[in-house]
Length: 390
Ligand SMILES: *Cc1c(COP(=O)(O)O)cnc(C)c1O
Image (cartoon, rainbow, N blue to C red; front, side, top):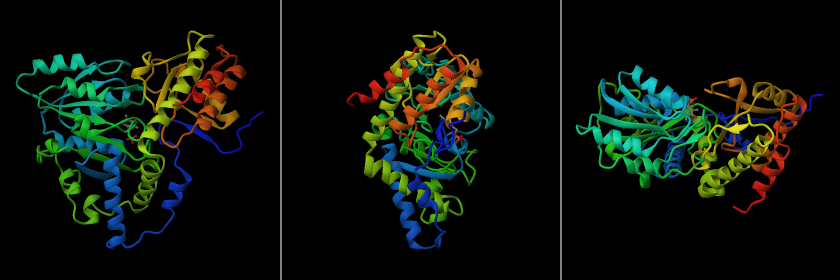
């Protein structure tokens, strides 16, 4: 019997659930794009987005997804033949490195598998680069495929006085995990609207320091991607390189109000951490009855607060069971060695304890229904984790 009717629970790591309030904010006609109202709202949104990232530096917005923002950042940081060092901990870090390579950047990789980037290895590699040939160090704060979280302040520290820019992909982490761009010395930060920012997909952002701005324009800086023009725009259309994404601006304004002014950024980070701990507690307990069930990242300090990757024999069947019987959609095991035996649970953006219990409860019901061996107390463990004072 299917019990899937009712409001679906989508626990995939992006696009994440959009709050009804944010959807309603988009439900309006475009005003005059040359009028003051939208220009002022856009400026207010840019200021909110800088607060979200913890920066007073520069911000260039783009109409495009995260891949677009990768390319935008690359077009401003690098010139053809420049050397970059990519610290990779999963599918997204590796794809980003490939994209930069395709743009003509000589990308050297330090691949950490599904472990977080090691600051000591970074320090050793940069110490060898006496000439300062490496122009940028690229790292995903959270690699959404493995659920690995990098320690950005430790990596920045490891860079010492090497002149490379620290470039961070925060697409799966901004608005979920702590980010203090200026305090942490991040030079370039990249994110997109549809994950922790709780908006529909379609806009993305690059924040950049004065040090990064000082690179000036390069051979790769084509007019559309030029971040200087956008960050220092005088007219609304210049921020966006053409017609602004009007309804997205309303969505961003509403989402930032919810995150920054109502719940508060620290509370938002703490909520994500608590939902993540409940998910880990359930997986640990299920693993007691099946050694095949375990978290992809062993060290809790290296786990993402926005998404949990799990190895679970029979995950593919379980995912389709939870969707068809419970209306609960779980994430695919992206980039796993055996994708059919891996899945991901998102606790990203507009997610609360009830939604996480729904996802975990559906998983446990599915394991019972499908005869997947598991420790019985997973849901109890999640409930206990959620009951703990923060
Ligand atoms: C989702 C994601 C991307 C890609 O973003 P798109 O909007 O799908 O282009 C890149 N990096 C990370 C870490 C992501 O989670």
